[in-house]
Length: 75
Image (cartoon, rainbow, N blue to C red; front, side, top):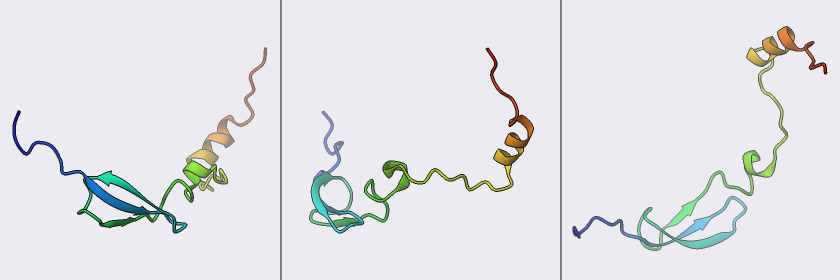
């Protein structure tokens, strides 16, 4: 097997947006570094469910709804 082909795994601390921390193995940074997250699963709407608002006020979604909004499926 070739030498130096595997990454250097070491322990780092990950700090979440709410201040909680946990330790994990990673190839990021150096041994003992702290990775501070700006977005994480406890705060981002993609993981928390969010509000579901559409930000497309007068764009493509509005055009589509105007054009096809009255169509229904009849059985």
